[in-house]
Length: 192
Image (cartoon, rainbow, N blue to C red; front, side, top):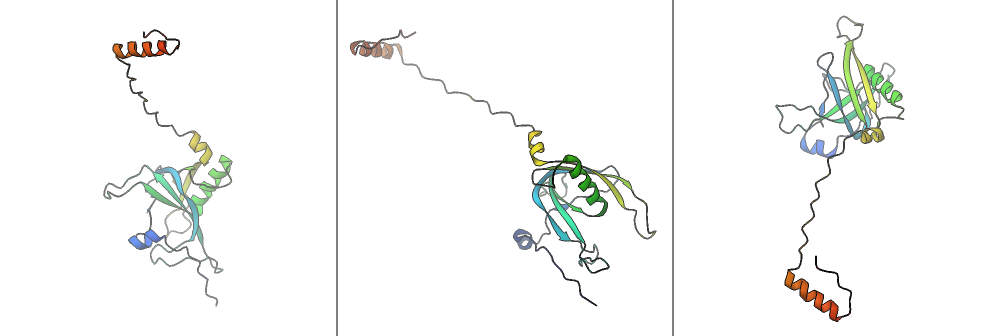
């Protein structure tokens, strides 16, 4: 029997330093729930892991089971976590990966990219193939490529530009200036 090779992506320096596992995972608790945001980090691939044991998963033939990790800046916040900045990770596999791939193709983009907008909605439950397992979740997705997303992002209103008042010379200074210019032979405009 051959032992499957494990190719894992190492944690980031800050995740390892701070003991965290990265941003929170996006959750789809009920049908109709939507997660939407701008992609902030180039999507990566990593090996799927068993939810209970955290051991890497393999197909029956010994090959790694891969998933795509997409990091989004969302408007979601966990009120119990004051440090939650809304960053969420989507782990694309199975039906979620199919929905996102279809959305990317429909957008005309060659793939996911930083700055692109991704919206995913949990739309229904699929057919339950095994009575001991939950029915698979079905999703719909929409993807807007980065260049298009930037064009459709409202620009902040320009800051009001106030010019400082220009100090006018006092009448006595205007008269003196006019005399000096006249003495020098310069054409003098009236001071009004």
